[in-house]
Length: 406
Image (cartoon, rainbow, N blue to C red; front, side, top):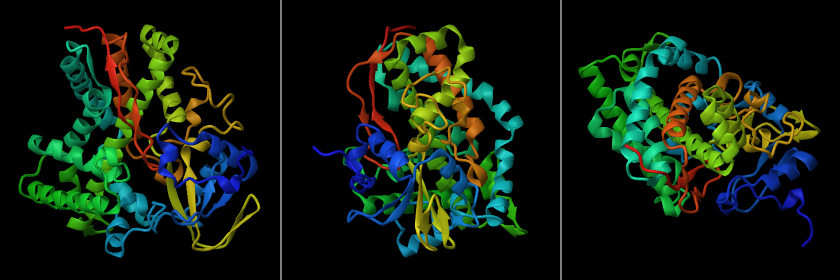
């Protein structure tokens, strides 16, 4: 078989992701065509950005590389575009700054520090529920529960609605995976509509019964002197249900899988919890939750000799940037002691740096600390199944076993 060429790369083939990110393709592009014009019959044409420096540059230059046409490779149906453009991740300055400033108060260091006792209590309860069983599906029974609980707690989502919120997040990010119940664009659009409808219901609840939660902050807030309406509130809920739930669950599952595969590093973390924060940065680098986000060129521009035209789609590939050997030594090696692991771009960089990064790091630290302390001999009880998606880099099922404890 002849060696692969850049023209052979197909980053839109979902089947290429069922065993993990297609690192062979990314490595080839970084080496031979780091700003690659990707044009296949299976989907839209775009520039694939695969180097760490270029992903950072594009992310920090919103005037030239805009988020406002949505951050998805595929253009949404016209009836959804206006709503999606009201999601903060699909905004450029100064509008993005106004929206971010309003919600920032829910993610201040003081607010995150206040949440730590609650996070620890929830994490202990999650492990309590599985410890005596000796086996579980790590994704559903451990990884998914803490971020779902935290987002619902932040927004004041009633207990009886929390399972529904979790299922909506699953459907929004799994529409391309038939095993996860996805049926393509129709299912994604239906999940989108249901999520927005639920958000409107939640806004009505908070206007009638305000509480100490982020949903109340939003419905009582103003943006540039204008009150927050249902459209604005709904887009915030849509973003947070996906971003705050799916991504942290994915990193937790990916991280535990790597620790099971590297028992000596797991043992070191269990013996010295001070290693956990850097290990989390390495997990984020090695297995980012999100494969890509898109920008759209607002003007003709040159990048590494490539002539990008106004209106072209420009797609940032995080698993590739995180394995750039110009930044990371031996990038394909998983190393919890990596000195510059925090240079990973999994939380983004620039104006769209993840709003909930501090909360995600807290949740990851606490759940790994709890699992490593109480279920130290966890091992795989079957082959993990990954999501068939080129957007979320997720494990959807991971059966594990461990010595039962009380």
